[in-house]
Length: 186
Ligand SMILES: Cc1cc2nc3c(=O)[nH]c(=O)nc-3n(C[C@H](O)[C@H](O)[C@H](O)COP(=O)(O)O)c2cc1C
Image (cartoon, rainbow, N blue to C red):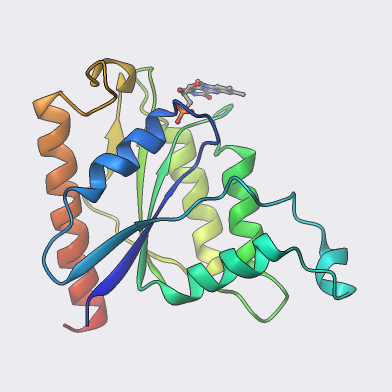
């Protein structure tokens, strides 16, 4: 059976570059795998009262199930104030709870960070890895995937036109799949 790799874009913006990267990754799926974009835009800000008082939003139930059912996860994150956007941190929090039921546990992850600037969201890329330690998301270390000047790589229809970026992403996906197979003993 195909292995399912979730892709989460850490931005809610309609014209988000991160969402466009996530979409571009769909065409790079290797044989034996399914790539699936998982949305984080419908999740209310995490409030423990939801879990403690049996009042869990339907969007949480759906999201937690989606995370439980994937084999691996690629995070495509922009940077907000040298960290990850609040919406992405919220998604990490939502699926980490209720206590003792961490849906992220043992997933094999990768981080692809991007920015219109030249620092490529380095801060966000490394901040999210701190969360992964506690969430027990096993993370590909190499290659590190930093995408600078991400506003410059699209055509007028929002498709990836820059060949260097395309090739770099393709290599990153291949490395992730190789690493995934190694970790899973396949
Ligand atoms: C609140 C906020 C904070 C930001 N902070 C950073 C930052 O620390 N580093 C950076 O490179 N870009 C920063 N930016 C610019 C984002 O990189 C840019 O808006 C980018 O397009 C957001 O990603 P998206 O296209 O996926 O929505 C910030 C943008 C916002 C709205």
